[in-house]
Each structure stands twice: as C-alpha cells, then as structure tokens.
Image (cartoon, rainbow, N blue to C red; front, side):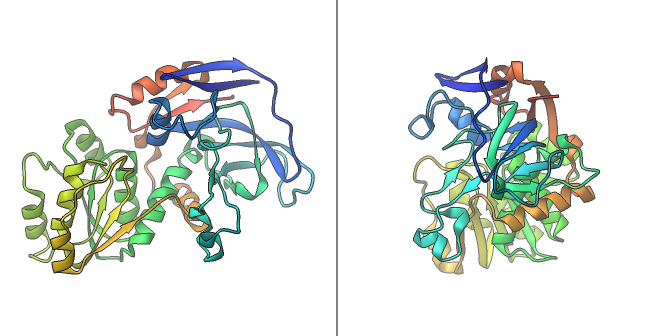
Length: 338
C-alpha cells in the first residue's frame, strides 16, 4: 500500500510499504480523504520532532470505509463508512479518573504520537470509530474532526442562544467556531486582519470586522450597548490578540483560548480582575462533540463546499503542505485512496 511519510526537514515522501498487522480490538480502514490542519503543519515545520517518531505517518482528520475487522471487535461490519476520534487514553491517570479522558495526562493523540491516516490502510482501535450516516459523502465526513473541535470549544464556553460572541481569527477553526456558534443561536462577529480570510468568512455568511481599520473594543462596545461580548474566542494565536481579548468581554464574560501558543503570552489581568472574567482553555473534544459534528454535517449546517478549498492526490501531499503554508487555503484534503 501507499503511505505518506514525514521525514523531517519539511519533507513528505510517498512510499510503498506493507500494511500493518491487524491486532485484536482493531479495525482496518480504507482511508478516502485526509484533511491537513495547523497541527500537521507544525509537524511539517519540525516543531514537534521531539514528539513524532521519524519517519512518521501523520494525519488525523479523515473519513473512510472499514475493510477488515480484528478479533474481539463487535458492532461494526465491513463496508461501513466511518471517521476516527483519534484519542487513546490510559484510563488510570487523575484526569481520566475524574472523567476527563479526552485530556488524559498520558494521552496518545493518534496521528501524532502514533501512526496516522495518510496511508491507504489505517489500523485503529475500534473504540475510536464514529459512524457516518448514509447520505453523507466521505469528502464531507473528513471535516468531522475539525467541526468537533469547534463544537467542543462552543460547548465549553457555555454560549447560549441570543448571546453575543467574538471570534478572533478567521482560519479554518475560527470560521467553524463562528459557524457552530451561529447554529447554536448566538450572534457572532469574526475579527480578522487578513483581507482574503475575511472575504472567505463573509462568503460563508459571517459578519466580520477588520481590526486594522476599526478598534475592536470600541466596535464591540457599540455592538453590545456598552456591555461587552458574552464570549470571546481567541483562535488567532497572535500575542496582540491575547492581550486585547479581555477588553472585548462583558462583566463576568468568558474568554476561551483555542489557539496553540508555543510560548507564554502577556494578558491583561487587571481587566480579568476588574470584570471578574473567566479564562478557559479548550482542547480537542469528547465523543459527544464528534457525534454532534456528524449531525451538523449531515443536516447541512456546515458549508462543506465553501470550506474545502482544494483536494489533492496523495502523490502531491508535499505540495499540499507548502500550499497550506501560505495561509490562504481554508481546508485542503488529500485523496488517499479511490
């Protein structure tokens, strides 16, 4: 079978190799599509070389079809369309024992810590499978994982229908958070400095502001009648955005940190104190988030056609990563097997 391997030094190579042995409790999935995300790009840049084992098959946003079932697996059959919730927890650490298995202190993020989906046949624990209903294309189903991220972020914020939310950053996750929050009944504005990303968000029906042209704090103050936003999602990863996020939130409002920050950032703790703000982290997802994401894609709440910028064959995976570096693509999918 063919597999894309990260070799280090910003290099991906597509190689022929034997399929992995199917172990008890596993299923083998014929991978149809794999989405490339910001975490994959961090790996490509070498930022996670201490975590991945080279050469590494990466990728965790996917959809495919079951082609083989290992011993001891029940409730699944060959031919079913599935995606994978790529988390494996130990069940014994303090986080797991407290019911927070998705952020296990010894979490195996499949596709980073262990082999991922950029291969024609992918063996995964049956416990990670999520069923894709009839009528949902495998192309669209490859968006389930990032949609689940957005669902988890919005659910963690406790955003309610009628609330006002600001999303800082109109990358793929920022746009999905705004889309999910809107579907949950909130009023949403997206703050984005890049004109192309701002235009892409507007094409999806989202309201945007340009923080280089207007003062976001003043704009939000007027929008909310002087109150401030109920929830602010920081999705840009920029230091200035973190510093300014607290100025956008209402008294006892919530700031949700979604972006991955590779280094400590300054934050206005005087504002946090003065307005009794909540600062929340939101990482990965729980199974209920995956199931809700599947429902949203199935019902058409997620504009898949507008989100998917381009689909490339597995042979062009290296070019796909370099294209993603430009920051202009909303979502690139790799077609792994036909």
